[in-house]
Length: 287
View 1: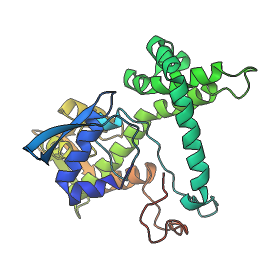
View 2: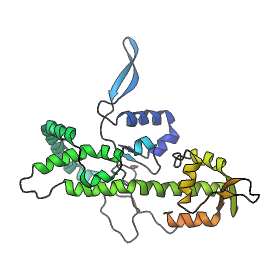
View 3: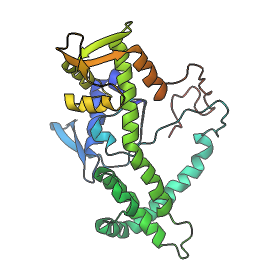
View 4: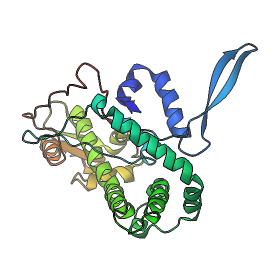
């Protein structure tokens, strides 16, 4: 589990690179990462298994190779009138340990059956409409759910119907989340370019260079991709006042309208108080 991963990127780039290598290489069974260790005969390269489930928490976007292989769960800010139960790790430790034991026993006992289902799995029903990468990461969960449902004698409380509904929502929101976060990132970039001006014209090439260098917009690789993306938000490529240069006219009004539509936090928002289990202990207890 990694929390506040974006802070590590800025504070310790070497450690961040090591963690990213674990995430990139630990996607498939058998994935390993090399580390140099000192032994009796000098230094040698040791390979460590990096394949396991991983949970990443943070406020910034990750690289595309990681996001495409993940289930993205976006957190929603709590409204003032909403009441939520505090998560206290100490209180739930016993329950979580028991759940982990049960899962481990079941997985060890059903390993071969799950592998057989996984190897023969090719029908996703309603999930077939989602992209191939998402179906790849769904397969292990689908195999487990199918076996769990097959063990039920009366068909009650089946796992797959509820799970597939959740996955359908998550898969369908991938493009939606990408679109929203990208336009928020561009609006922030545009504010920096505009500075205190009301309006500014920026040439195609210059704007592409700046968007490509932004972590949240690095997926934009060409002028065509930039035009397609910005065109969805009523920012159309055109000419400057001389009619010779092609680019975009960014205005303060467009930035304010975009931020109001795509989720910039209201200035009256008040953060909730930290829970007893979290107070003074960073992010411990957040899953």
